Picture 1: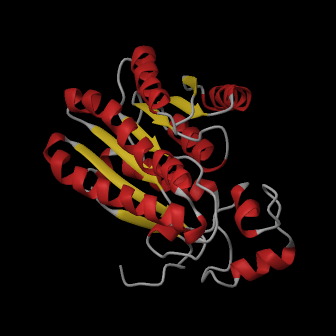
Picture 2: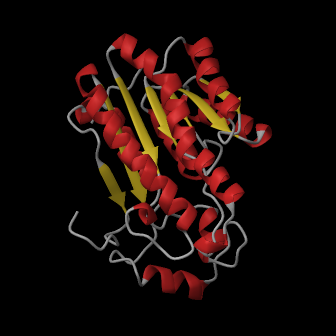
Length: 261
């Protein structure tokens, strides 16, 4: 299927590795030009170069920390200055620390809100005028399954990503007539470096066979997902084929989500 993304301009967060990199790579493969965002300059530049070499697409590195208001403003401003417009915005980043919810002080909550919720608000605010001017746009937020199926010790993420879902649903009602959609994806267990940090030994990317077996036993499909399986849904939601889908929450979890909706 031709996703009709050739010539589109995308901004992708967390794009130097994991899910963000997979999304940037697939959108580039479909013909989009991609402004790739991450905190660390060197890995980001390497990721941009690799995607350009493998896909032939135009990429642009924007080193920024989405937890900072000024950096969010710089991301959309730089993308607009470099490419002239923004058609696709993929809000994706890491996650706040884990721990007992009562253990977090106001500063921890403030940082979590800045990272997970306010980054989405600010980046969307910066990208939306370009989409409105052109009468077309796609916004996709990457959260986690815990946002709709809470897990103990994930309280900072659960609360702030639930806010993202509420924000997105409300915005979808306000921009539906403008040719712009906004949807949220809630990935389950995905094979990224974070899976070792959260569910393994605590070392990024490392999880022993016993831990992996315990995890996969909880997933009906019997395996963890791949970043490309998130990227595929993102690309579809960014395409004209998904023009009648907005305000939705999509869980991509191997069947692990335990409710009817």
